[in-house]
Length: 64
Image 1 (cartoon, rainbow, N blue to C red):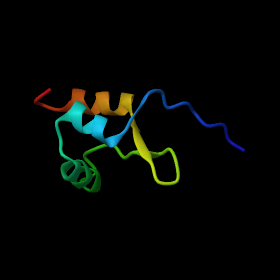
Image 2: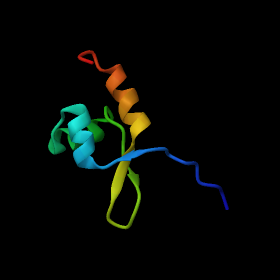
Image 3: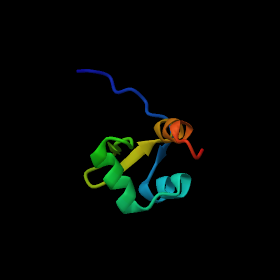
């Protein structure tokens, strides 16, 4: 069995929307295009994004 790496703080979708200024549909469009981080499954019906990945994405944006 492999050990799970800790992901650090996790952000749910409403928090990601506030942090990025993107709407739900834009987040999913950009994920499909490969230009936005994919979330991690944290439960059977729940996902969240590692805060570090969202911060890194924001730092790469020209408007940041």
